[in-house]
Image 1 (cartoon, rainbow, N blue to C red):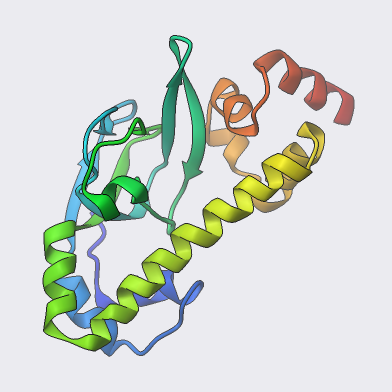
Image 2 (image 1 turned 90 degrees about the vertical axis):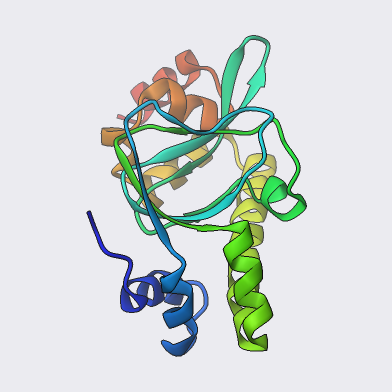
Length: 193
């Protein structure tokens, strides 16, 4: 199991929001290591999100129910920060389920511990800003892609930006994430190769 040191946490956040190591020392003290098996549910449908998570290893997806099946709305891999953020911020249930695609290790900070950190120092609010900025920019980018790119363009972007996704994630989940049927993904893959 990887230990969530302030240096490792800083390295992950620096990609999005570089700040001095001192901001991550207190944060790292409240990080909880959690492990989950492939296909294990981290947060169930209609439950309240209790954690902000850093994905130390493995992969997870966010799913919503639609016509008796799961639709993938997000995919996360190592060194990404994720949460059902709407549920986390409001501390109310949502229809989002978080499920492991692979065996997964998370570094998690609870809602309660994050609130206590904010209360200790105004500096700690920068951590909250970093988290909200990461969540907002990732979601907005995905929405823009979904609305402005064709399925083929979304597929090509996924290959460019996250090539290992195809070795680690079932094609039916990738198709769902791209907003297309598995048969359409097969046609796109065949046409491109």
